[in-house]
Length: 149
Ligand SMILES: CC(C)(COP(=O)(O)OP(=O)(O)OC[C@H]1O[C@@H](n2cnc3c(N)ncnc32)[C@H](O)[C@@H]1OP(=O)(O)O)[C@@H](O)C(=O)NCCC(=O)NCCS
Figure 1 (cartoon, rainbow, N blue to C red):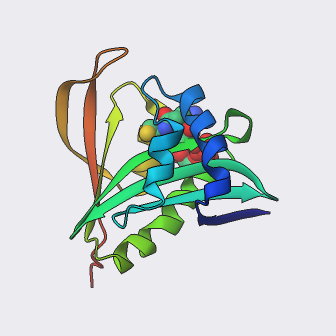
Figure 2: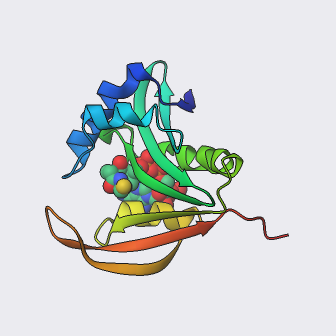
Figure 3: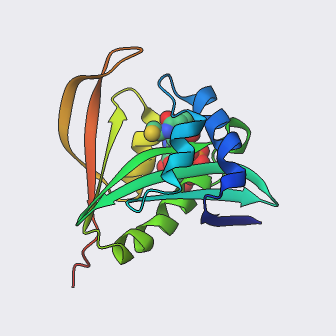
């Protein structure tokens, strides 16, 4: 059974290892650990037993929430882990005062773009050459958290 909960100190090394294995410019362990003390930050982990299968990081400044990263361990992909993390995060960001969530994604990252589209994010812009290693454009995607009623 998958359980989603706020990241804890004990999970930091595993999350930093997943960062290193899955991103060309990863957050290092010290940076991830600092997020535990940052009142603007909220990181969630997806757990099976005590094993971290995935995580999502966010920061919220007034009404603007940003997704910093989302990652699922390769062996646990396409089982709904990232979707569960992102869905669980939304109401928590609303509690922190967020009215919208923004994120950047590499233009070639089809799995992530498909995930965000499934969750209702829309492309609102393009940053040319935003990413390094390799240099690539970023799509800027956004989702409103305000209810439509
Ligand atoms: C992108 C990523 C987080 C998706 O994680 P995941 O747990 O496998 O995703 P889920 O199983 O929750 O998928 C949810 C939806 O996303 C989309 N999706 C996910 N992976 C996909 C893929 N490989 N191809 C196409 N669509 C995909 C689908 O719409 C999927 O819904 P469906 O299974 O009902 O079709 C994962 O591939 C990953 O960690 N990639 C490396 C890190 C990364 O690029 N992170 C994003 C940039 S910050």
